[in-house]
Image (tube, rainbow, N blue to C red; front, side):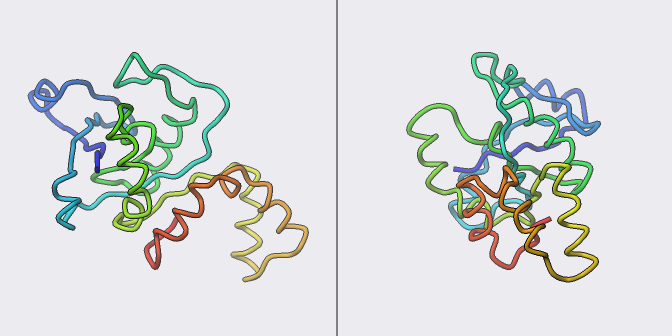
Length: 171
C-alpha cells in the first residue's frame, strides 16, 4: 500500500485529481502507487518523519478528518530541504479506512527502506546536538541527554525509520 503526494503543474491536472494541497510553492495531489510498490518498482520518493504535535487542524484533503498541526509545516520544510518529486508523509499517505490502514502500517519498514531518503524533522533545540556532532565528531554525555529527550527519538516510528532506511540517506 503506497500513496504518495505528487506535484501537479497545470490547471488541467488539478481538475483531473480530486483534492489537492498547496505546499512549498507547488500543488500536490495524492496518488496510489501500490501496484508499483508491490512489484518492487515504486517511483522515486522521499519519506518525511516527524513527531506529531498535541494540536490538530482540519485535514486539507479530507474535511472529515484532522491531522497534526505540525504536518503542513514539516511538509513545507521537507520540500525546501529535499525538493522531492514525490513525498510520503503519514498524515496524508496512510489511508484512514480499514483494512487499508492496517495494511499500510504493517508495511512501514518497507515504505521507509524503499525511499530515496528519509527527511527527519527535529526540534530547534536539537540543532545544538547536530552542531556538536558535526564539529567534534562525537557527542558529550550532557548532549546525549538532550538527544534522549528529543520528541522524535522517543517515538516508535523512529526505530522503523532507522531500521528501514538501512544505508540510505537519512537527513
